[in-house]
Length: 491
Image (cartoon, rainbow, N blue to C red; front, side, top):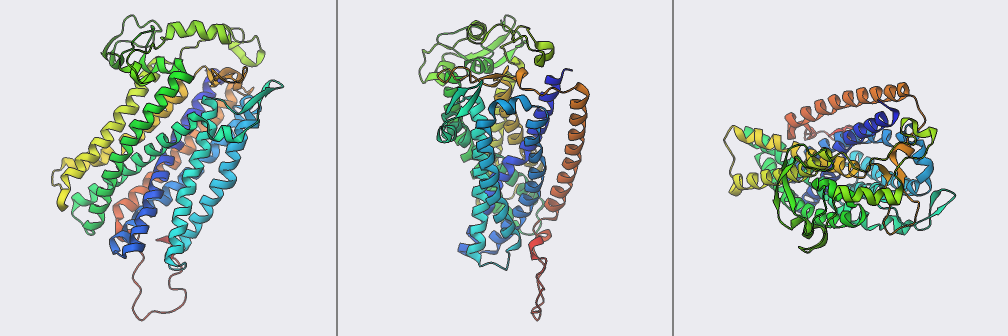
């Protein structure tokens, strides 16, 4: 394997792994803050128990997310130094804002929340919960703004062979970012909702203590999951229309649309090998004119196919890579403008399919637990526990589609933007040996696997322990010695 391919595998593995933690942290932090708000307002013990239980799981996941996220920025210097030099003037700004503003606030108030039980006034402690929860969302905003700039570069001029930012406001309000952010946050709430439904449903089925906690948690998760799927559908439609305008090759690849159609039909499922750019041997089940509607809100719009777009891209961006030794084996070779069609086609459908399954399980769980009912079938815990995985898979498939669909570009050209502000992925990689990249790939994958074992162990431990494992022990009534609650933060 070449350095470029290895570097892409390494970034893909570490990013997808890290993103398993991110959506759960974002969604669960807001839900935990909402649970604590209910406790402060009503004083009901079940809301306190919910806050303590789900808050413990949030802390475990948050810690793992921080550890796995640190590696992401290191890789820009390790494997993608040419990319960092090209986009550093732009890309560094939102990343710095994420670190200095969002993450600083997030970690500070999370610490106050952890150590502030029984020390801070209730409302101040609650404010800390909302502060770190909203900072978590702000952190996601800045990261997505940076990623969206790669998908649609704006707010720059082209000077001395690289983009120079002239408007941070344009970068942060990029229409690609404004569509991606609510879509990603809705995906995060979908993950957190399925997590609540799965864990609470399992406890409810076991008929142990604290049934009111599990009933309330399951119902909350079910309703949040349904609402999140509705937002995903709306924001996904907005993203599709932007994709049609900004990245037509990604749109065609998502449908394995090899030839231009007017009107264009939407492919439900394909039978055959979709890897070829001509699709001659592929049979699909289609909905007539639906793709035209998804692209432009009408049923007559022309949607260009892969084969037609290749010639347009060759005319705009060249037929061959530059004859530059830094490109290695690709120097002077023809440019393949067609993304991996099986990955884009099936990744797009996995994203939608798993999201729909997750929402469906939430609706079913709401129906089965209506009016305080407790499901008795042995299939129920398997269903809800298995349902936890579906939004994780949908989120991962969505990101794989998003990143793979823009190849061979690491910075995609803006059709209406400044000329020259784009970069091939092959030009972005560092000058490394395959041995060096293999070493870091194996090392990081091994460390991440070990961290995965730790997270599963801790999650399993506290999930099985239930509410009793996270609530502080009751003090004796006659105990008023100072220091009795020294370890209250641990609960």
